[in-house]
Length: 623
Image (cartoon, rainbow, N blue to C red; front, side):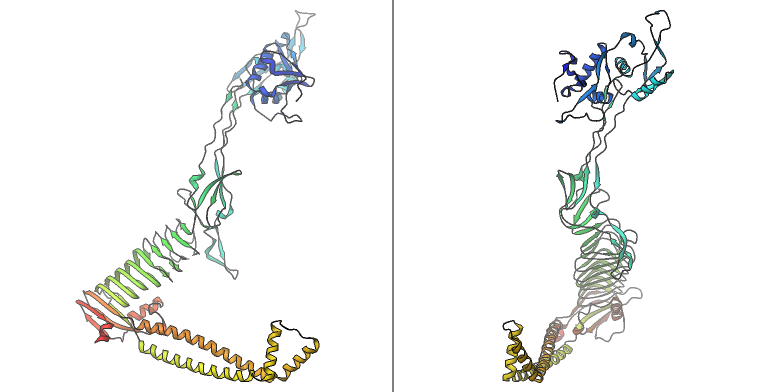
């Protein structure tokens, strides 16, 4: 910015005011309170600013309003007026007092008259107020900020008496609170009905109830607080604004998330891949391998769930709702169906009228299981109290069973009342009937002789397959040993491997050779197919034989039953099963009830109302 201008005053407050050929400029380096003193000195010295640029003056004095214009080199330009002129005392008398109160200033505009030098005693000559003089006069009367120049200009131009509000106090603008905004659509659930592969909608399931998040995804962003904008009294005194309240983004960071402060802002970012969960009480967002829900499972909240990971529910699972997943933990009562593919099913409350099925893991109910079905094909079932339940599993442990049907490989019952219990190894601490329910105990004994017969038959069939395959291979060796056939097969093999290539004439000769030995090639193909089929049959037979051997080893295991205390009519029988049919406890619940409660033909081992009983198949074989 050029500096070829004359200072209004070389000393005193006005040293920061300069008159240039294009107007009056304020020194940008000394804006603010220094400039206020300079302007005040000008006005009190009997001058006013002609051609005043009021918005620029307010920006230079109080830093309020639009930014100052800039010169070509980027420095701000504070041209506040066109000139500084003397304020004639005679004209100063034209300006009346101003009424100040309630944050505003009112001025009574009326026609004004100036003295007539030719007739000092006369009424005077009509005069007109000047806007720039008005600003200077209001300054001297204490109004340095907030003048409404448009209203003043209009009032001056009307030439009639009227009281006008000429200035107002500017109230401070409070700052905005810091806030948290979502920056990822992945955190939203999609509760639309689930679309099946055939295009139909499953109204019992939602499209995406539990969103999955990848690592490094920005979930939330903190929008910083603002300090607000200060206000000003009409005197120019600043009114401080109230800044907004801050928030801590870290309060939203749960497991699997972290706060990152980047150039673009402050973000909550996922640390790992997993399922997103929001704690409704603390608003914490977590990302983990386990899905955590506190809303319960119902038609309104979640619908049926088919999950790929672990699931933990703090609410209830309502009737007819289904949860499929890995490990399933429920803290509320369960009235629906739970199906695990291999984790652990853990119920901290009760299982009422529902079901729990685990293919490769355990099931545990800490409360009461009532009218429920529990199946653990390769795991354990652990219950505190079961009433009117069907329970099956590799290992079953029940502290108190009432009117239940229980079947498993290893079964341990504390107190059994009116229940039907079956297992390879059964231990009952106390057994008694209950009302109309009989107390039945079965020891499962496999039919090993049947397995031996099947093993012998399969072995004999495998031997026949081997002999037949050997004859077919010998026949093929004879056919492929013929010179023409051997030569053709050798050439065909090298052609397939791109080891040789024929000229057109050689290709025609090769085709004629194939036509001549065509019947032999057809016979070789038929024999080769028969050999492949025999090999497949042998492989299948070997697998069946290995399975039968496993069943025979299983059949050789000891079956045992122990009832330590009989306190009412109790029957103990042998219940046979075929190892070829698989594990005897992996059957449908309805079949379990029919098998244990239906007519029995197995050997009766014990019938009594008191005492104790113990039996082992090992003891019988020894005897």
